[in-house]
Image (cartoon, rainbow, N blue to C red):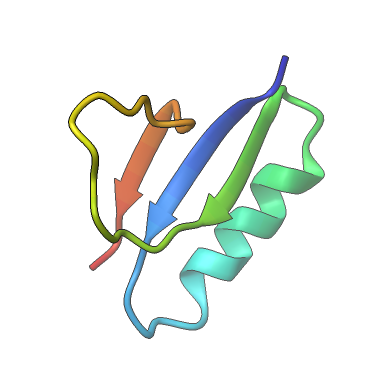
Length: 55
């Protein structure tokens, strides 16, 4: 099963896409994607194993 990594970033256009492309190209059981944070429900479980904040 693949683990999901979420990256929160601002308008930066070099590092986050390059990191995601590298993570997704490897066959290491890890998938990365950019995320947008909006409302959070108290009892909802996050699908992400790890969140990285690049803001």
